[in-house]
Amino acid sequence: MSSLSPAHPGIHSGDLERDARQVNADDHDVAPGDIAVGVVIGRSSEYFDFFVFGIACALVFPQLFFPFVERLEGTLYAFAIFSLAFIARPIGTIVSMGIQKRYGRATKLTIALFLLGTSTAGIAFLPGYDIVGGWAILLLALFRIGQGLGTGGSWDGLPSLLSMNAPPHRRGWYAMLGQLGAPLGFVVASALFMYLYGSLSQEDFMNWGWRYPFYVAFAINVVALFARLRLVVTHEYERALEQRELEPTPAGELLRTQGYNIFIGAFAALASYALFHLVTVFPLSWIQLYSDQSIADFLGVQVIGGLLCAAAVLASGWIADRFGRRNTLGTLAALIGLFSLVAPVLLKSSEGQNVFILIGFVLLGLSYGQASGTVTSNFSARYRYTGAALTSDFAWLVGAAFAPLVALGLSAHFGLAFLGVYLASGAICTLVALYINKTLESSRE
Image (cartoon, rainbow, N blue to C red; front, side, top):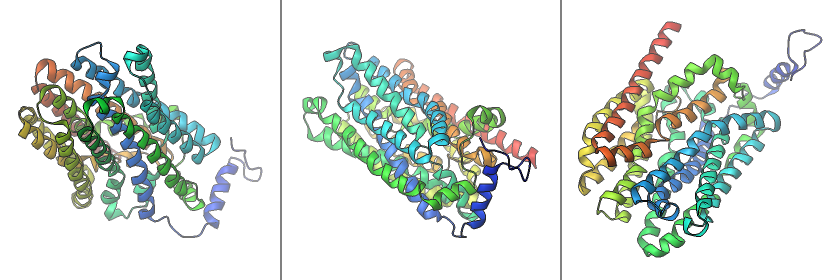
């Protein structure tokens, strides 16, 4: 706790020290391009870990960990474990903020990425249910929770710093750079599984082939850790974060004073986050269960879709800078709503499934590119660091955590039409949240 300055009662010494650092600092600004490198590297590694697990939920885990039930039920159980990371993520964020305040940003980031990497690599060594019974399922769940805690703790503030340092007329462009990590991570994960699934016999793939991507994930996390530490622990970046007041604030205080911003922010991106797993993880499970299309070929289509998504993310920055980020997100929510009407029809044939993937990925890239930070500017400077992190956590929890589980359960038991209803509900929630946000902004003016 900062002590009071005896010369100036009521003024905290910590405030004076921060002011002194700002006065003595040179005028060299942090280059947005340098920040973007750290953001893209960090997000790509995190998404690779999550997509490796998600793909394995559709292709491997039902048979390996749930052989005592039918394939559909086993896949649903795997998707239930998939959701645990998103439940743990905000907990990881809150705990890590306390670690950062006490031990520093570098210590927090090292612990978080070590937890994320070891949890992911640990899955590669798990025996199946046939060997250790229910312990295999319990360990899988614990490692998945570890992934969520690690991802929540890996928040470094660089996306917020990037947004605040971006030129006013190019904020949409810089906002999408952090989102670019998602399609990049997915493309690498899908391409790796496509190669292994297509090159190995089914027996070899189930025995050891599926484990290889989890080993790779640990190596990628080590590289990402050093790349991000090189940025966030330098004096220049520490000073930039402090000048922007991008420091942790108590979660209880944030929820009391800014909880409505977190709520609106989570729902404003719901259409994009719901679509996220409906074109990445869910289709693999559907193809595996109900289609005669080759898994390796379908993964190839998804790789192409991921590349289209990356291009669409880039395009979203250009579009948002010309038409506004909120207008872009609202328009794409409406288009996702229209897409939900034809999605059930497309998924009924092999050709339609491929079209579903390609169109879905383009819509995902255009919307997801601007889904982060559209309303986090509502946070005052003091709350933006923690507020942006928790808004992202709850957006994933509300929009994406249960999407594969719900979509597969509804579609398998009641028909694909319910997939369209589920996706349409996300689009409606986004439009309502954006309207409420616009109304609140107008009332403040």
